[in-house]
Length: 348
Image 1 (cartoon, rainbow, N blue to C red):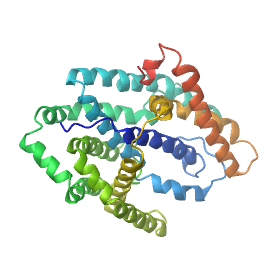
Image 2: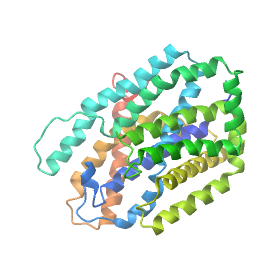
Image 3: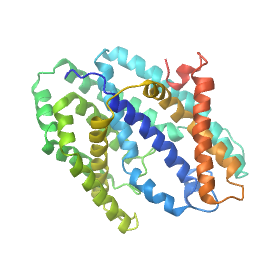
Image 4: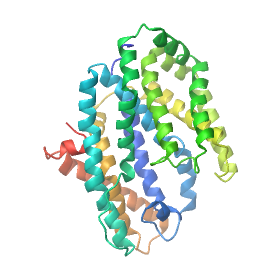
């Protein structure tokens, strides 16, 4: 394997993406279709809010899968396959099962009570589907990853480094995602949770995330060189979507836009975020616990705020603030400090 030191920019991107995920989920509660996918929804929509959110929704989840694959690369530098699976079982599978049985039913109870539906205990993956997918991807791809680790001078390893480390390699990477989008034909493209589209796209992103790190510095320097091309291309495709009303866009264009945004984020992160401080160390530990509990905080905030006679924009920012403060409060006061709770949220 190519020897890389810890990449703090990847840690920052994980933290930032989860923060964007919280904002995105709060925004759903202020769209007319929010209830259709199980969110407590304000009676008055804020349609313009979806303009910036639509810029996020084609790359926010794929980016998390890329970053998760990169995390496996770093983990394998210090572990064998048994140690890796033991760690992933404790830090991903255990929180996934606990969340399905305990966390998810709580926010669903709030939803049922708000709309006066029959009160039922309803365990399930909900927003935690992401963790389940990551665990499966690790199981499926671990033989390939271990082969590359043990055979860093193999013909396959040399081909991967040579191809992915050059601009032509990015076209090949995008081609995989384009083929997935065309063959699966998801509708809408942005529906990743518990769909075939989300599973296959996540598998590709997870694998390429590992390979991006495996390729080493030439790949990242190449991203840096072409970063302005990526962002211009992403913006052109995004504004084209806006001009078409965000609907009816060919799947292959959505896929290409997604890849260009992700390349842009990685390139600028590599340039500006490869540093560590106490804030990053704190947020890196808290990212997944906050991700696990944030839906309870959103639903609780909506339960209290949405019935009030307030401007829809004011409601949004109040719910957003309550979500962040509530999620961080639960993490800081309970999860982080109570020893036996920590493993249930993926912490050591």
